[in-house]
Length: 509
Ligand SMILES: Cc1cc2nc3c(=O)[nH]c(=O)nc-3n(C[C@H](O)[C@H](O)[C@H](O)COP(=O)(O)OP(=O)(O)OC[C@H]3O[C@@H](n4cnc5c(N)ncnc54)[C@H](O)[C@@H]3O)c2cc1C
Image (cartoon, rainbow, N blue to C red; front, side):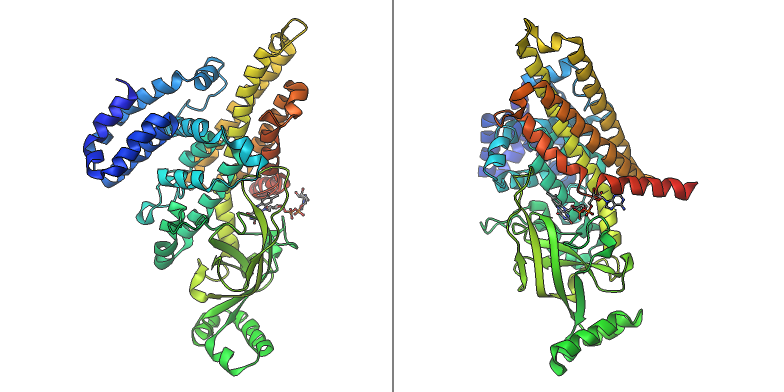
């Protein structure tokens, strides 16, 4: 049965109940198969979670094979499978395969046609991000209680890998947003989760303002980069009693003394201080100026990792401003700016996870963040190889296709092997993170190091196989190269990954 009819049949009751929303779904089905496939997946999962439409669940298997068949008939997927260039589905269960397939379709329909324009014009595709959020990808691995999707890290990796075949930069932004949503879900108290998570999950301010509702800031400032524990932005406790009675320098002194009083400080803080005053500048903040909420890591205590706390800071807070939009080699569909804090006052209740926990929160978030960003590299390299297979078949020199030369064939074989190896490494790390294994942090670092380096080399090799055309902006390959390059630098540089792995090795020795 055609997938379209299946959708109509299964959702008949549900759509009838939805009225015009149902019509929209049918419209989406007709106009955009990729979007429809993604909607279908989201609908099935929503129904599953809410147990609203039990027949949807029963029919998931049929829907899946129908979609798989329709995807197989598309030139891109059919081509990729013919060439064994995409081993993405191997080893996945039914739901995981479904997620991967539908995200590939979404990437092909909704992102790939626009990625070059988004790059050239530096367009931040808010609508596409909101659409992805409406499909459940705004808080993928946050719990369902406050709007998260409750999926696994493995599922998140599949989603980011597949979406990146359509646009690496946009997907990478989504991955950072998801990391922050997880931090709020995991370390936030009930009130913080209730207030922020639904809005983070929707990535939609609903008022029509051109803003994405997500946090985005965490570590370095102009002074502290790889050595994040040395950061020097400050958050000083300040409170009504002290504020009323003393001039500013005295308040600061009192507050500085307070944060050194150990266990007593919370008690004294309750009496004296119900606000923190944040000062300093954060560099390189993805989404800076566009985000509504920032998770700011700042120093509330002594030097080192244990003196760092994390605050939720709303974008309209007085004293918060942004630097110029950075001009970058790649990642041009998302803005990067400094976030500047000058006497930014936030309620003490905006502290996430307790005083001195900021560094731990950042490090825990980064384990998953590293898998996510490496998944974006994998998706970009996958799309690059698929494009290169096509290009080297079409392009003829010396009277035959370029890929009739064994030297070229060997390179293609190495790239396909590299992608398969990268995929397995990433999925191993994701599964270990899902299992909360103690080996997970080192495995995440290994996967990030290996996959981002390997995939960049693959894309660079693919560009070489395009000859001079690969250097032209008419071809996507140069954009994949530019977009992937930064993954070797952020979420901890690949040198820092080596530090993490060797530290683990030497601790065990
Ligand atoms: C486009 C972009 C977006 C970003 N988005 C964010 C964001 O949203 N939030 C955020 O917090 N950060 C973000 N970053 C910052 C990123 O995380 C940092 O750039 C990165 O952590 C490296 O810090 P640094 O640039 O200060 O380099 P440095 O720490 O100065 O390092 C410079 C070089 O020295 C090497 N090095 C440093 N120390 C050692 C050592 N001990 N041994 C060996 N080698 C060493 C590094 O590996 C690197 O090669 C972003 C960066 C970019 C480029």
